[in-house]
Amino acid sequence: MKKARLGTLLVYITILTCACGGPSLRYKKEIHTLLAAENYEAAAQKLEEDKNKIFSEKNAAMYYMLLGVTEHDAGLAERSSASLAKAQEFTDFYYKNNILQSAETFLINDEAAPYIAPDYERALTYYYRAFNFLDMQDMAGALVEARRAVFFLDNRRAQVKSKYTDDPFVQYFASLLFESEGNRSSARIARENALNAYENAVYGADTPDFYVPQNADKLGEIIFVHYNGNAPVKISKTFQVAWGDVLLAINETSEDLDSSPQAQNSVISVIAGDSITVAYPALQESKPEAVSSRVFAAGGSADTILASNITALARLDLEEKRLAQQARMIARAAVKRAAAVTAKKTAEQAAGDEAWGDMAKMLVNIFNTATEKADTRSVFTLPAEIRLARMFVEPGIHDIVFKTTNAAGHEKEEKVFKEVKINAGQRIWLHHRTAR
Amino acid sequence: MKRLLFVLTLCALVCGCATKVERMDVNTTKDLSGKWNDTDSRLVSEEMITDCLSAPWYNKTLLRLGKEPVVIVGTVENKTMEHINTSTFIEDMQRALINSTKVSFVASSAERGEVRTERLEQDEFASEATRKAFGREVGADFMLSGVLNSILDQEGKKNVVYYQVNLKLIDIETNQIVWNGQKQIKKYVLTRGKNSW
Image 1 (cartoon, each protein chain N blue to C red):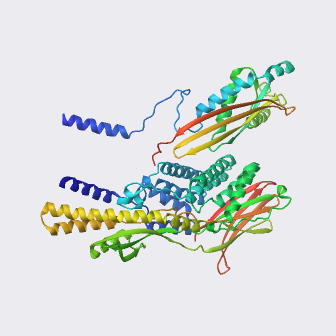
Image 2: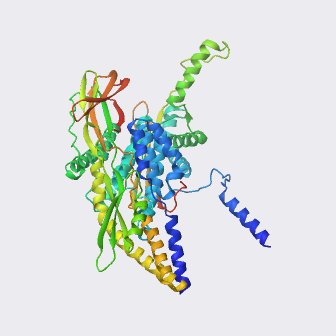
Image 3: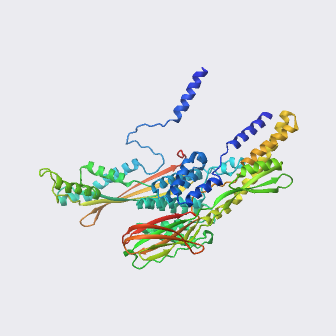
């Protein structure tokens, strides 16, 4: 019996020491700094270099999404599409095999489970891949992704209960692609789904109401996508609870750039003694510098609208997962408490000395608190928002100028797309990222 | 004995990590992901072309023209939810048509462009005896084109994929559809594994 207990304890400690989480807040900020400098290629390169150092296979879906989005911003359409294909593959695998509720999430922390992308991130993989195919002049490939996106959204609407009932932007983009194909029926359905979803305030986005002139077929159209800012990053917040008749919160800490939550917790566990640390995720948002943007071409201009509010989607996702996270948090606290008590008893019986028992309990407490961290994984290379403009111009060769404006009304950034040829009835698809 | 066991274990470990490659017969059916693959492409093209060439339009045309009809393969649109390289399917159909020896076949518009450029260059650089003349191309009588559709039904790891290939043979002079063929494939796919990261 004594041997079995000791064995269980050793296995537990081994699992704890082997646990591997997602990237730290410092790492996320490093990537954001490269994005803010519009050095997307360097950001993609850094992610690739750190693949095996920072990430592990259970985070494959997140890794390939982070990479795919960055490669898309860098204009590396083919590479981005390949990365996002892998992201979709891993997401599908882990989603279908439903590994989220693995035992490790109760023993260690939520990051011990494979990364299952939230539905809004999954929907965006189809969008990003579709745009990559457009960048590669492959409309057929883009349409495949549009069909997959619509299929995914329809299926999840039927199966999942969530406030995120649809993705208005992804549906709207799919409708544009179906329109370009001449598939009016699918375009109409996707457009209706998009407009219905836009009415829902949870998405925090503007309903598109673009002006389409009567002679649109004789004009060329510019579809401009502006990726603005950086999506919020998730940080780990922890609190210590004293064990007694009731759980009592005695201290609260938050992840910052200089110290990991695990390190803070380890120190506290020694000081606080008979307490258990539990962690929960929170969002750290950063407002994009640009509050509006505008596209200029052929003597005219068009404002972009807020087509997808990724910050709002991240908030919604976190809110909806909170109950399940809290349940796991409580279960984990109980398991960790039991492990500490077991360690104390085992050591006391083995050594015949209470001091050894206390020492063992303290060590297990340190292990427990050191591994207690909230699931802070997310695709943090996504923008905070996706803005969209549609503009009709006379056929010909045009310089397309894109400008952003800050809250004070000052123009902040300008990007010129030189000599873009637009034929009558043709759509030009452009995208640009500003990550400050 | 212990040393032998150690060596064998080591060998097994080393061999287990190595990439294994084996040549396969191109006609072997091997389904991995359950997606549209080379076997589907080959089987559909062969069956549909056989069906096409045994349809009534063929004998009627033979009587009308007094010679084998000339066919060109147009586009096959991919309207599925998979990234399918339709050019391999088009090539498979071309091969099936040519091998039937029942029709003559002309190059596609992209191939014709290349041949025309070559003829232009011959006009300038080739000897009189070997130079090929303009205006002697054979015009196609019929165009074969089609659509690849799919319906996916999914529940967890279980997928049922239904492919429907529709091909049409159109009389280029009259726009009449002289043959309309359809072939369906239904697959039950149980997804299990994932690739290495």
